Amino acid sequence: MTPPVACVIGWPIAHSRSPLIHRHWLKTLGIEGDYVAQPVEPEALGRFLSGLYRETYVGGSVTVPHKETALALVAEADEVAAALGAVNSLWFDRGLLIGGNSDPHGFLANLDEQARGWADEPATAVVLGAGGAARAVVWALASRGFTDIVIVNRSGDRATALAAHFGKPARAAEWSDLPDLLRRASVLVNATSLGMIGQPPLELETAGMPDGALVTDLVYVPLETDLLRRARQRGLRAVDGMGMLLHQAVPGFERWFGRRPTVTKELRDLVATDIKGRHG
Ligand code: NDP
Image 1: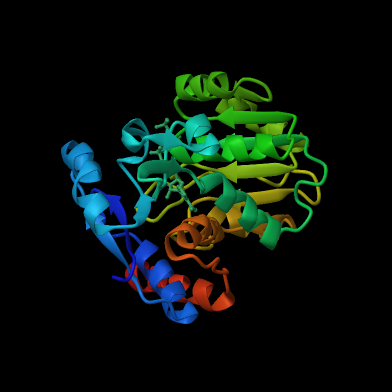
Image 2: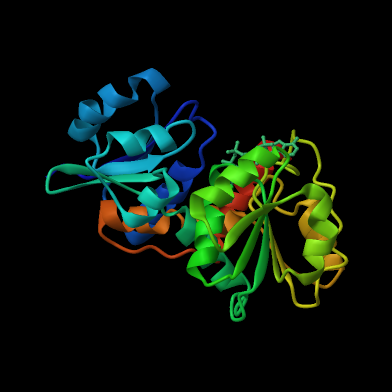
């Protein structure tokens, strides 16, 4: 039998850290197989998924700009992918192409690991951003029982649309409402690209948040963003976004290669070194 090969498809794809993560697990678990980066142009996605993909791969990850388009091309979507309107992983079952989305799992597993008990009393959470990542975060927070999930975004109409997509407990608010909102929020999530290397900084004061509140940044380049540094200085719990990247990869690996991998310190160090190497 030929060893299984999975891939990540995107355009462009050279920046992806998924091969590093999955190859690490293949090596440490002693599994014969491979995981490669596969560039696919947007207009070629349909043709690729119905042809070469099936012949070459056991499945794989899906990234920008294909996450939404791929949903329309699968035979079946799992509950999370259908709710989010986007897939980030693909596999075959009974000969059919199935799409799933493990971003909410990655977000929750990271916080469960790094900030035990963070959702024990789920009340108000503030989510900055209204793109694909924010969508996964809102769904994840709702699944943990948060009763008030407030979406704040530069383009207010996108925040309103995202809140309307999920309905209660999600709602939209204005950037100018943030000081008041943060005074009663137990969770703050940055799901914008602000604070990422090459992007403008995220200028936000977290000093007014309640003691014990959690601040998490989905941005992981750099690992320690200004938002997290200031939250830590204030004595708040602060969790970086790299763990989400690592944990979202776990369910896919298990499907493609048959073993459930773990997110270890060794893997974190490997990816952190790669980030530092590429971005200083
Ligand atoms: P999108 O392009 O879909 O959304 C970008 C978001 O950032 C929008 O809400 C956008 O606001 C906001 N934004 C961008 N520039 C500015 C600015 N100058 N001022 C204010 N707001 C701005 O991206 P994603 O949702 O896919 O990703 C968002 C971030 O999350 C990225 O940094 C990405 O790397 C990270 N991410 C991390 C993951 C992880 O595993 N840790 C997983 C997925 C994403 P507007 O609507 O007004 O344009």
